[in-house]
Image (cartoon, rainbow, N blue to C red; front, side, top):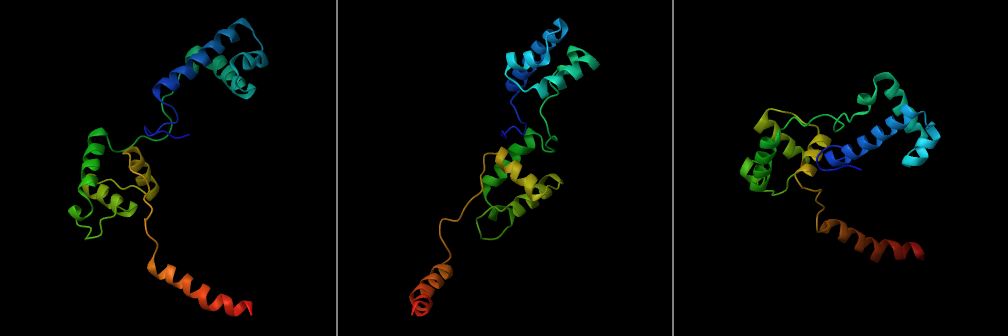
Length: 162
């Protein structure tokens, strides 16, 4: 599961999991078996074997949380706020013409212009998600498509049934 802060877990969630690993370390020192620890903590034996290997190599400190996973965002909080403000102004305010729709390509170009940093479309989508924006779906269907379907149903389909 993904969270808007960019990591797999919140700081609180990481601390909770670290406490579980430290509890396992205490049991490793007491000589409790891996299957028993897995049962007590309600985790997989594979996870406990990995923890035990790390514990043997580096002690309890080796089981400490390494922080959020993934790469760091190249835009700090101040830049993200500036980007959010720019997005609120709309595409026309930034020279994207009269069409008032933000596309990932447009947002990526805006980021490049404002901060001299290039993002892929997927990376731009992640930033938009962090800022609380979602993928937009048009509220209407293309007139041409509806008319084509209606014409096909009225003329072509009945002719094929005969």
